[in-house]
Image (cartoon, rainbow, N blue to C red; front, top):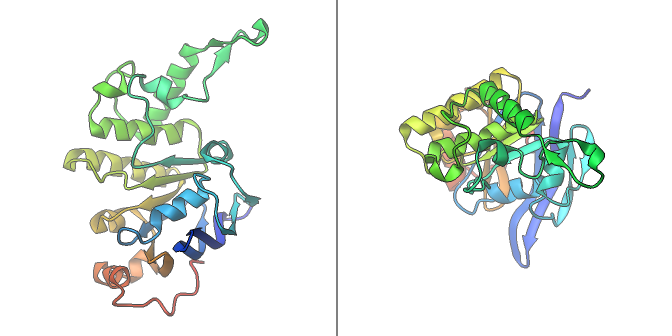
Length: 257
């Protein structure tokens, strides 16, 4: 088995004449945590959307877990083992925790009823509790609806969904942007737990302190291009900012391998 979980080659996305992403070459090792940084409109979220099938790329290839993939949509990516926590969270406010975790992937029983199925609530609750324990997420009552939870609890539920289904890769797009200090700390502890368990992760973040605390490597985007591939131990915040702002051009960048 290869030690590479994800690789992109010449990944490109054009919206008419707008080049939102151009020639992105990226490699992620199994168990590695990598941050993607850049200013607004730099191409970070566009890159994530191409990997997860939210949008169809203009050109380029994506190899995931040793196979070339072309996901028709996020459900295909999820079935392959990529769980994504978007800024919008994609949670159903009127449903409780197990119902949200298993939305679209419900467990059923009594399949002898032909086309009819009965939901296996007991199994889904048990798997939900296991997923929460795996990530260290503490939800006092999993029967509460999402609408009755704090922003931090909602974010934690979205993250716990990745652990419940034994994902091969977790992608988090600005997971703490709208959270307070205490809630941010809880999410960061979950990320550390995923690292301890050998889970691969891509973290999109503007938070420099957070990035240097949590990841192994930093990729910088600027104007739709990858301009830097930096080992955390060999760089600092000023260096990263210089790539984000264009003070350093990234002319020496030859791909994130």
